Picture 1 (cartoon, rainbow, N blue to C red):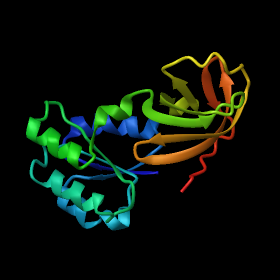
Picture 2: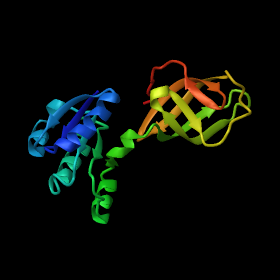
Picture 3: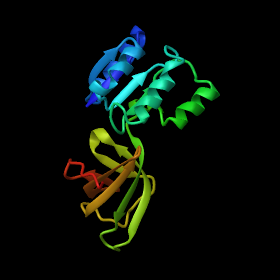
Picture 4: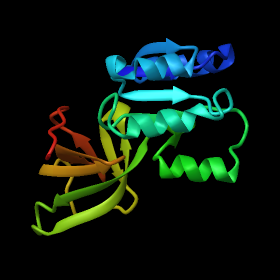
Length: 186
């Protein structure tokens, strides 16, 4: 996986790089946003991190360009900054599906899980927490009616606009991915 880090600020680079490395990204750094924009197709990043305070006019242009599909599909864009965004910037970021960089530092991401209860054969749709590093899904509501070690053959996760399929087993109300292999339903 490739991450594109666009910044000329040493502090930002020092704070962002370790997080991306820990998440398993190879990092490509650019100091100038126009140069990064010029090479975006060749880079084809999975993720982009930039600071709107460094590039107050250009970050929206880059985001629009990337969201149009140039540079790859499903490229996630994160904004890193020390000061709060204005309401106008927040609104524009939401419209462009841009995330706050600190979302990457969370242990889990919120998702929706759909599966068929192996006992009742009924569909279950629930909000959940996906702990990527541990390959666990945790529900906000306890599912005590599912026995420990019960196998769920097909579990679908909807997360950040992506759909993934897993096999899973119940571990004290927490689902543990058995296959460690994502199988896209699309």
